[in-house]
Amino acid sequence: MSDNNNTCSNTLQTAPDAAPVLGFNQYGKDEVHVVKVNRDTERHAIEDLVVRSQLHGDFDSAYYDGNNEHVVPTDTQKNVVFSFAKDGIGSPEEFLLRLGKHYPENFEWVTGGRWSARQVTWDRIPVEGEEHDHSFYRGGSGGETRTAVLKVDGDRKFLISGLEDLSVLKTTQSGFVGYPKCKHTTLQETEDRILATSVTARWLYNTTDVDFNAVYESARKILLEVFTNHYSRALQETQWLMGQALLAAHPEIAEVKFSMPNLHHFVVDLSPFGQENPNEVFFASHSPYGLIEGTIRRDGLADTDAIWSGTPDFI
Image 1 (tube, rainbow, N blue to C red):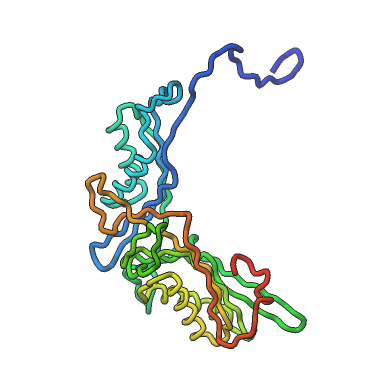
Image 2 (image 1 turned 120 degrees about the horizontal axis):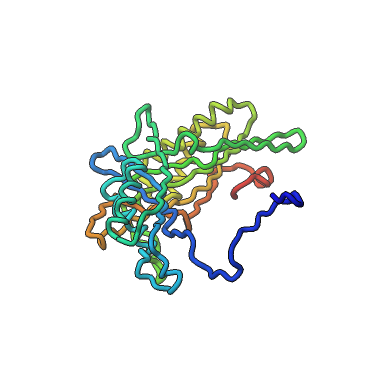
């Protein structure tokens, strides 16, 4: 502050002809989503982590000269995450400590870095009071959202209830074979894969004389148990079985609509690193993904398109 004019100056003092120099910098790989399945026993365990890796060190020549001799590729950093996961993840903190030790020990120009992780937590799906061996759902704050829509037309009231983002995953008891092949087909058939989806389901009541809380809890339980208790040959089949079971258990429901992404988990090829991967380490792909949508309704039900008009999200 000047004593003469009582004004403030926030001008940064530097020579007007000073040359540009490189300041702080870091680089790495983000959103490396690794899933490790422990299959040592029939009761599978799952570890799910989203990792960011950023390196600090002497990378000046990459900026000044386009010289990449010190640039450890971000693809390499991704591969390190998958390779390390083969031996188990443990706690996020322990896993990050392993990463933080690896780079300075193997690349002398790397002086440090910043590594972070978000752990995705899965709870076992309860079936008949027992936690299931290989089927899981996202509980707690990562769980589903309950929804309801009321449409009034004169003296008629129509209620649509449902849930969205009920995330479920099973580590086995799913496959995908027998589909048509053409010159653009690269997907390999498999009889044992991870099946993961996030269920959005909405059902239309044929009456308003309903214990809505009880039906919601029952419907949620049915969806979880059906997902768990069959070998899924396609997400379409799982969707059909869910809807069929829901209508069978609840005569007050006229129809149900589903929107279910196929959240792909691809087996990581660890052979370049001298490691085998018998369906244990997976890359959880966020996009693109399959999107399976369908309606299961009672035979003979009148057209309901006008009732569903304006209902958010799908179909």
